[in-house]
Image (cartoon, rainbow, N blue to C red; front, side, top):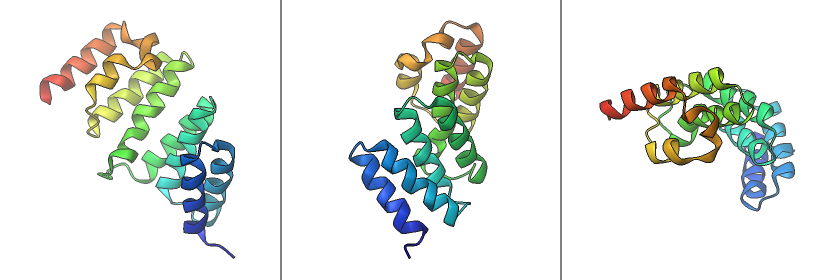
Length: 140
C-alpha cells in the first residue's frame, strides 16, 4: 500500500500535468495518511484554486499556514498570499486584507505581483491596501 509521500508525489505529477482533479484526489489521500503535511494542504489548495474552488483553496492555504507558519519555504509562505487572492476574488475584502497582511508579515515580498495581479483588483483601490503595501515596501 502506498504511503503518504507516494500519494503526494503523484499529486505533484498530476498538478504539473494540469490534471487538477486527479492532483486533488492524490493530495487528499496524502493528507488522510499524514494529516500534518502542510505541503499537501498547500498543493491541494493550489489545485483547487486553478479549478476556481476559492473556498476550498482558502481552507487549504490557511491550514498549510497554520501547520507551518514559520517555514522559510517561499511556497508555503505564499499560502497567505494565495488566500488573499482567493478572498479578493470572492469579494471578501476584509479577509483578503487580513491574509495579505499575514503574507507580508511572514516575509512575502513580491510587490510586483501584489501591485499587478488581477485577482487583487477588488482591494487595490482601498486605502487600507495602499497603507499596508506601502508600509511593508518601506521596510523592505
